[in-house]
Structure formats: C-alpha cells, structure tokens
Length: 588
Figure 1: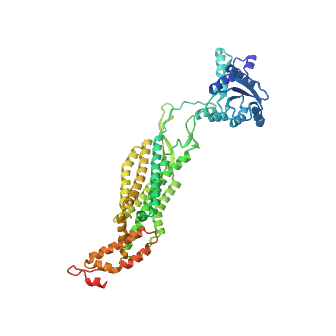
Figure 2: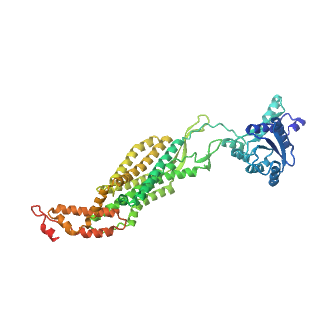
Figure 3: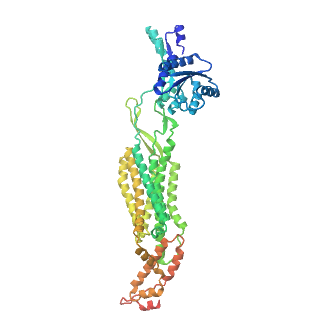
C-alpha cells in the first residue's frame, strides 16, 4: 500500500506489495488450484482503499478468466451480521459448490472459516498470514494465504539507501515488490522459529541420522507378540473347553493358566521396546542447543524404558512360580504318602509359594523405579566438521544404578529357576499327565541356550538399533513361545491319544487302594515281601494320582480313606533261607 502516494512525495523507491497486483495474481492462483463458476471478494463494509484495490485486481483477473464475479461488503466486528449478509448473497442452504471466495483482510478470516464449516463446498483464499491461516491451510479450509513478507519490507530499504548514498545508483522501477508470496503450506518448525525470532542467522542444518528402528522391524515385533498372545489364548481356551478331561484336571489348570498369562506378559516386552524418541529436551531450532523444556514424547519413552524390566521379570517369575507351586504341591503329597501322614495343601499355601517369588521381584523393581529409573537419553556420535551440528546420534534407556538393580533381579530369577530344577528332579518319576518336571527342566535349558546365543549378539550389535531390536525381540518371542509349547503340547497330545482302554486301566489302578483286604492277602501269599511292596507302591501312587486330580483342600479326605487300608499292609520279614514268614501274613 502507498505506492502512488510515495511517488507523489518524491521518494526514490517504494518497498512493499502493490495491492491491485496482488489481487490480480490471487485470481489466477485460485483458478489454478480449484474449479469454480463464480468468484466473490469479501470487502470491508466501511470501505478501505487498500482493500478495495485488492478486490479490484481480483475482479480484473476473474473477468479475464471469463468467470462470474461478485463483491460483498461485510462488517469486521459483527459475526452474526457477517454470516447473514454472505448467506443472503449466496444462499443460506447448500454446500456452495462452485463458489470461490477471496478474503480481502485478516479480520474477516475467522467468520469466513466458520462459514466454511457450514458450507463445505466453497473454496477460499486469503490475504495476510498468521497461525490461524496456517492451520486452515493444513486442514484444507484455505487454498492459500498471501504474505507481504513484512520483515523483508523493513530490511531491504537499508542496503538500498546505503548503496544509493554511496554510488548514486537506483533501481529502474520505483516499486520494489515484496509480495504477493503465496503460502500454500504451513512453515516448518525451523522457518517458524526464524520468523518468530526476526530472522537471526539461520544456517542450513545437516541431515541427522537418528538411527531409528525401521517400521518394518517394529511390525515384525508386533507380529511376534500377536503370535504369542494367540498361543496363550488358545492354551487357556483349550483347558476351559476340556476342563472335565482327566488330563486337564490332573494338570491343575489354575497353575497352567498363570503360565499362559506369564508368557503373554513376557512377550509384551516387545511393545515398549518398540517405543523410541528424539532428544530428551527440546532443541533450539537455530542453534540446536538443548533447552530446559522436556520434549513432548519424553514421558512416554521414559515409561516405556521402565516397562521393559517390569514385563520381563514379572512375566518370567509368574511362569516359573506357578510351575513351582504345582510341583511343590505334587512333591508334598508324594512325601506325605510315603510316611502315611495326613496333610492338607490349601489354596493359601499354594498362593504363598507364588507370592514368595513375586513379592521379592516386585520389591526390587519398585525400588529401581523410585531410586534410579531408566530414562531415555540420546547421545550424539558424529558432528558436522564445519558447523559442529550433530549428524548421527543413538538413543537408549540408561540410569545410574541400572546394573545393580538388573543384577539383583537376575539373582531372584536365577533362584526361581534353580528351585524349579530341584523340584523337577524330585518329581521326575511322576507321569507326564500329572507333572511337567521333564519339560520344565527342558525349558530352563532352552532358556539358557537362547541367552548363550543371543546375549553376545546383542552386545556386539548394541550400536546397531535394528539388529539389537531384532535379536532382543526374537529372544523374547522364542522364550515365551517355546515355554508355551513345552508345557502345553504334551498335555494336548496326551489328551488326544488317550484311548478308552487307557481310561479303563487308569480307573482300575486308581481303585486299587479300595480293594478288600482278603483279596490283597490272597495276592500276597506265595509271593513274598516283593509282592507286598508292589501293592504298597501301587496304593501310594493311586493316592498321589487321585490327590493330584482332586481340588485343593480334598487331600485330607482321600489320605484318611486310603491310609486306613495301607497302614494295615503286612510288614513281611524273611527267614534265614530268604522265604517270607507265613505266620506274619496269616496273622495279618
């Protein structure tokens, strides 16, 4: 504005935007970006010369394009009247498809955008730029906004005047136009900061490699977790569906359900492992120096960092504490059966076993979280030789005392595994339908094999985020999925292969402790002490198997019934010739 006035008063140049020229170019720009049948320029109701020049230029361009033109004068201080006037001109209903509106001044932008929400078919362009226009452009509500580049208008006169004073040389054109500059996308963060800071020195930043995990590998990690989740869900569903089957009842499904849940929790470590961020603190867009403001994603990444040890430890301990509780119950019953003692394995005792391992690891993890939690930090590894700006960086979770807490957690897990191996050895002779001692030992060996292979690779690939993520995710998946297969597959196979003959034989063996005493006596005559020992062993195993399939709390009743028979079995003795004392048997 002021082009003609500057000439009249004899100024050597006019730096700015020729308003009519800007309106003219706006007409062609709008036709380039959209198709419409009628164009309208929204002018101030009070009439301002500069704004009128914009509409005049727009009218000229629209006329050359052969499109119908209209001008509407609206108030800039009454949105209700604004809306009423424009809808009276165009129509109160409909989406206004085929209409194009040029907003001639910034005060008219907000009510115009409100109209766009009601009549979505209209296309709009605007003079002047601000945060509202940038947002509207990003949302597709504005085709463009016209920028006069005011910083340039203020800066250019100084070198022009300096040069004119020194050389007496001038530009040929009186008007030095800084606009129109058509903005069709919002400025990036760096440009926005330069504008807000009145354009200090804004060097070109070199590209920085953040070494992010690739999207394809993150998807692969999600697939690993989904497979494990489905496997655990299938195992639980299978136990529920076959809950009345002998194999399932004997397997103590409440413990196996905890194993399946623990495997899902363990594999879920892949999810927070996939979370990654930039620098912990916001960086100045120009100098790239860290500020005191936390980045938007810092809290999320910090939480993901601390979630990794929680999920690993809780999932792993839950798996083996449930198996330990199951084996410990079987072992307790087996020992009591040998000594013919009455015993009751209550739910409280079983729960105490599980909590005995869970509570220590929870205490360690809670202390870790409160005292020295893992936090996301990004370290610059390479910088530009000329500018010193970073060109490569790595992000990882760190804390001052992480090694101490990780070692303590590992010790708790190691104790859990050691106790599981001891109980597996003690119950190794139990049938697979009732005890998983062999497969528990196999799962521990399998776990250590994976660690022996994977940990060295993870250490070597520590600086390669993609390799580190793949190996870590693969270990988590293989451990959880392998344990699921080792614990549940034998149960499924045993249930599927159980024939009717095996069922009958199992029922016959389970009733041996209830056979009348004369029949036992008859069996024992003529066979010596070995036959009696076999009968006692069969009675003992019968009690164990039926206790194992019974619900927790029924043990006392079964032992009391079976003990009344087994406690009267003959204690045979052998004479010097090795024969059994017939008198003892007859006396019994």
